[in-house]
Amino acid sequence: MKKAKVLFVSQEITPYLKENHMSNMGRYLPQGIQEKGKEIRTFMPRFGLINERRNQLHEVIRLSGMNLIIDDTDHPLIIKVASIQPARMQVYFIDNEDYFHRKAMVRDKKGVFFEDNDERTVFFSRGVLETVKKLGWAPDIITCNGWMASLVPLYVKKAFKDNPLFSEAKVVCTLFDDEFAEKLSSNLTKKITLQGITKNDLKIYQNRDYVSLMKGAIDHSDALIQGSEKINPELLDYAKKSEKPFLGYPGTTKEEFVDPINEFYDKILES
Figure 1 (cartoon, rainbow, N blue to C red):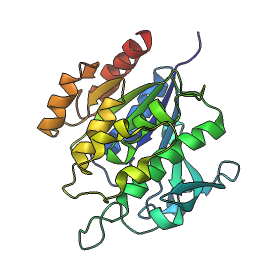
Figure 2 (figure 1 turned 120 degrees about the vertical axis):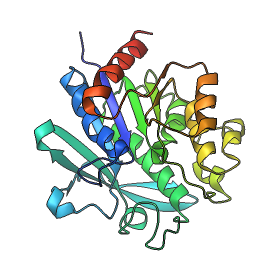
Figure 3 (figure 1 turned 30 degrees about the vertical axis):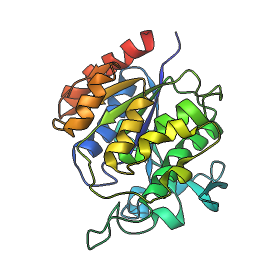
Figure 4 (figure 1 turned 45 degrees about the vertical axis):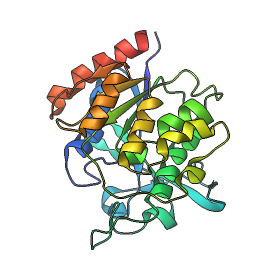
């Protein structure tokens, strides 16, 4: 029996970024799932806060070199990789000088939300899927952690649905307490659009806010996980009303969350 393949698309992973519940899950869930006998690949943005020398990041030339067009502008896609030795786990980083070299994640030193966070989200989500295409690696499950990965479900189910690498993949959206209050840019839907995505698909994003992004992720996912003990109540209600397979908050530590999520994955694969 072949190993199930799980792709993790994570906004934050420790030790590359500071520890919190999302970054710990980004670090320890893939390791735990790998130890359960599944094959994994893990991706995150190469935020400028990440020390490349200390963490021994290096560019993967064979995967880099593609340009992604967002809002009629070409943006080079650079892929880097590093290893978490104790976990026998590689992490791929989506990089671009315009989007990910500033020394911050999503806000500047004054706490101002970056105006191009929408484009950064588009670039990250598309960059992951284009890189997986180059790897020729067909995931059985795609897990999305954090709002910066929230467009992956839309792209998998609409823009990449005819690609044999993704056509059978089950998408799992994990909901966290990572809400932001700001609005994304007024031409968000234009920036999101790719061939295969219709105007009807984009209606959910009209409010251009956090809840819109995550509702879009819920709509285009096959199953849902409550990643934080407390999440936006509107999203929790929306998720439960979707009647999609739903795993309630499985706990904070790897000892708590690995087994329930692995069993959840198995049920999704069986269905």
